[in-house]
Image (cartoon, rainbow, N blue to C red; front, side, top):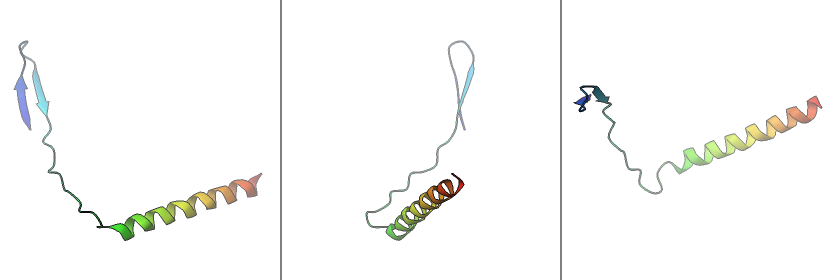
Length: 54
């Protein structure tokens, strides 16, 4: 953690950030597609439950 001191004597602490990871195009497409399909199923299920309640 990096700590600096300003003109008034106050200390400022800055968190150390993790390194960036660059994802190459085409990686993890199956997980994105699975997440999209799961979200669609969840929305349809919620609509069905709401229709069943009312």
